[in-house]
Image (cartoon, rainbow, N blue to C red; front, side):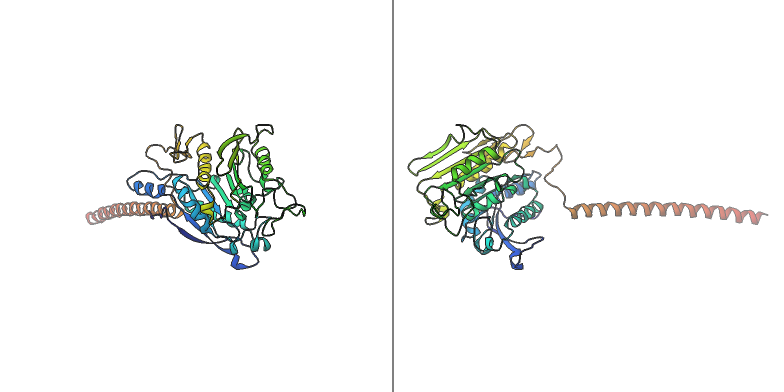
Length: 389
C-alpha cells in the first residue's frame, strides 16, 4: 500500500480534459490538497488488518479575486483536519474566477471554472476510494463566494463568504435539489466591496468593487430567504430565518436559521467586519471552524447520525460506521474499502488463466503418456504372437 501524506500541504497539477479555452495555457491548472490525519492513522492500522474509512466528505475552499489558493488553505486546513474532512484549495487563473458576475481575467475570457472544479472532483474520487462526489461541499470568499453559488450543482452544500449571486432564476435552483442544499452564508453589513444590498447596474445604488454588476440587485437577506423557500422547502411565514443560532453582540454577529426544512439555511451577518480582509482573511473571518462544522454535521445527518459539535464526533445508528456515519459496517471477513484496481483485477485474472492452461497441459501430457504405454504393450503382444507363429 502506497503511503499517504496527511496533515500536510500537497500541491497538485492537473490538465483539464476536453478543454476548450482560447489560451491553451489556461488548460493547465493546479490546486492544494490536504488529507486529514485519520487517513494515515487508519492506513497504519490497516496493515494489521483494520479498515480504512470508506467515505470522507470533500470540501472545496475557493479564494477571492487577487488572492491565491494558499489564502484558503491557511484558513481552513487545520479546521478540516479536526472535522475529518478532505480539503482542496484550487488556484484561479490570474487569481480570478469566472462566476457570472465576478471577476477579472477569468470572467473576461469566460473560463470554464465549473469544469475545472468538476475535473478536480472526478480526479480525486478516482484516486481515493474515500472521496465520493455526492459528499462534496464548498466554501468561497468574495469572488470564490460567487463561484460556489454559481457552481452549486457540484456540491451538496455551500458556504459563501462576502460573495453571493442575487438571481434565484439561475444557479441557485440548478442540480439535484430533491433533498435541499444546505446554505451557510456570511456577509459583512458594512462591506464596501460586495455590498449587502447586492451588486447591480442600478445607478441609484452604491457600486461594488471590481466591476461586479448583476442585472438586478437583491439584498443578501432576501437571497437567504429565497434559497430557504425555493431550494430547501422552508415555509414562507414568520418562522422563516427566525431562529437565532448564534449571537455575539460585542462583535456585532448574528446568525439566523431555518432548520425545519429539507436542509439547513443559515445566514450570519457581521456589523463591523467589512470584507473580512483587515490584516488577512484567516485573522478577520471568525467562523472558519464553524463552516467546517456545518459541513461535517450535514454529512453526519445524511444517515440520521447524531453530531457532537464539541467533540466533533458523529454517533451512528446500527450497521453504520465511519467518522460521519456514511459507511455500512462490512460483513465479517470482508473489507469493501479495499476495492481492487483495474490492474490488480487484470493481474489476478491472467494468473488464474495461466494456472488453468498449465493444469490443462499437464493433464494432456499425462493422457498422452498413458496412451503411449498402451501402444507399446499392444505392439509387444503382437510381436510375440508373430514369433510364436
